[in-house]
Image (tube, rainbow, N blue to C red; front, side):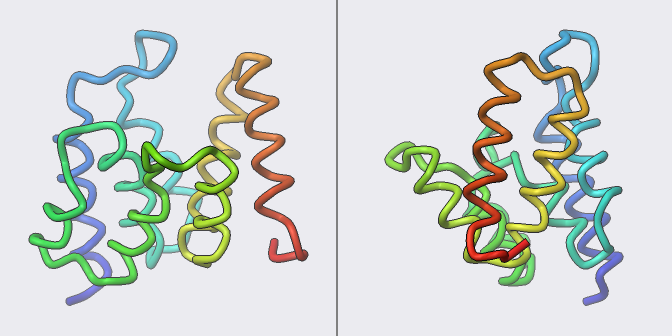
Length: 139
């Protein structure tokens, strides 16, 4: 299937999954975040960006995404972008770093979060993440 199909399906899934969720400011619909991340990336990565928080932050599961027949490159990247309860933050970032699609989306995610009035704690977390993700000049 064509990339545009996967973008539209990911848009629908993410929009419905994040319905009613708000950003930290309590005013902005959460869906605006994955949409902004996706808008910063090429079409091939847009479905991953749109879905990057759904498994971690909503009732949508990895199995649901596989059932919808998203291509493996999308489901694999979303899986890497989903922090598991047993992973500390560094372990999670190491998994992201080893998948080029997940890495590109994570960098766009961090960029959007850094430009969205983060708290000092969040800013430090994102700057630390950038250090880990850029090891070995991968970025």
